[in-house]
Image (tube, rainbow, N blue to C red):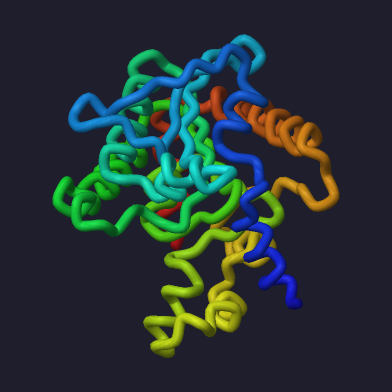
Length: 256
């Protein structure tokens, strides 16, 4: 088994830490908030407020389930437009009250169903991209499993984008890539080799800013490593003026 194939399997492992695990394991007094104030609450997106060393932080994440029933309620981590609108509502609230934002991303992509499209899936994702690019508080985005397509990017327009070691971040799934390129979704592993989707490949291309080691680590060690990295980074970002923060974020994505 190649390294890319191994990482692809590990990124999709049902036993991985979820967004809620990180939210509850890193942030004190985490309170989950619900709903987009427009249609309904989307279980595939979680969000709320917690404290990190006494500082209030808004946390948003895409949540996969740990078993079949949980995955059904979370739509297998594929958000509807109301999920992205809930995320944006919480991020705009964070901006209003001067709270930094931390996002945890694990999705194969946004839900492509008819209902989601009827309710404006593309518009919801596009609005998140636009609003996050100009959000006047620090944003850190962390890929904790799969980071697939625009569904992941809708929470990843951040000042810093990090990946756990055994995760993937790509324009679409390897199965989708293989289907489009070769009309054969069974060649997904071959596609994954070509796509440059692993953390080590993406940091070399400047797409991400940090890799957080996890291989051989216990859950508590991964949580502590992520917490320490967030604390250190927020200290750095908080020293920037709003103008410098937004300009650096703009330049980060313009360089692609």
